Image 1 (tube, rainbow, N blue to C red):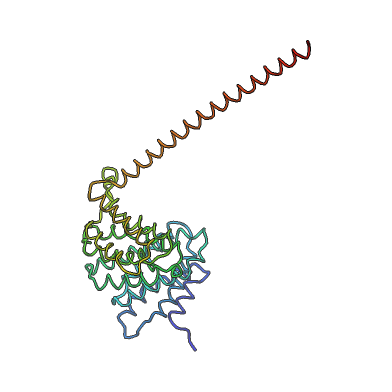
Image 2 (tube, rainbow, N blue to C red; image 1 turned 135 degrees about the vertical axis):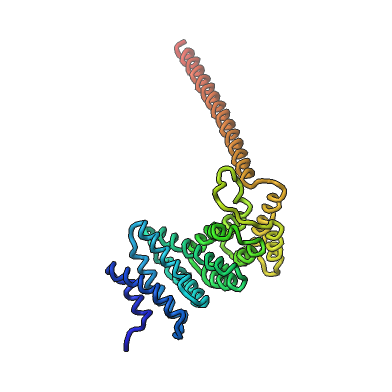
Length: 330
């Protein structure tokens, strides 16, 4: 029985020989273009086999410039398919593979895989941009993310992968869609993280989503004079608040989750009232410094008093010994 095409590619991509891996990477891009217009149908199993090979291909990539180039090539394959169905299968296979293999990545390779995830997410948004941000395509991509890396469950995906994606999610969306994504479209991209806020039991991940996704919007123009080169995503604070309120009012939301949601709503209210979150943080730090200064001064005064008391005690002890000595001599 002959080996299947996808198994053949997977073996070559995972080969120990660099020239075999590089040749396979070039061939597979052309194969993607050809197969997507042929009568032969591809399924999820086929893509998962191919992505296992791509995963090990990238595992072997050394040197930073090579890693960046190959990460770009692998993520750009999203656009190789003539059918959106195959593009979605490719995206699904990538995040499924990352979810499965993330725990196996050692500390020497984790940064390059984080870069690959960033570039891949960027190309996901580029794909949606090429389709004019049509809602049905946005939903398709978000459903894949919700199934793999944006689920509230703690057991669904590794914590490091989920927090990395929440950290880069809004940044990459801003880079790609700052001039086209309207507040209405933005709501669609916030929905998966609204579910996370409602049903996630991990307090660390909740805080990550709060800071990197929702507060990102109100902090992106915190210092325009210094960071004017960065694009800004347009949003409607009232719309975001309503969206959060709608989710907070669900009957099965736990109190601790509700507390986090209401804290975000409060931050948005402050933003609308002209209270800058960044300035508030600096003021808090300044206040803490003042408190620390007072505490140091208080501790210093106490230390001086204790030293004075100790000196007085020693002086009284010496005087007593001297008196006792004079009495004995008499």
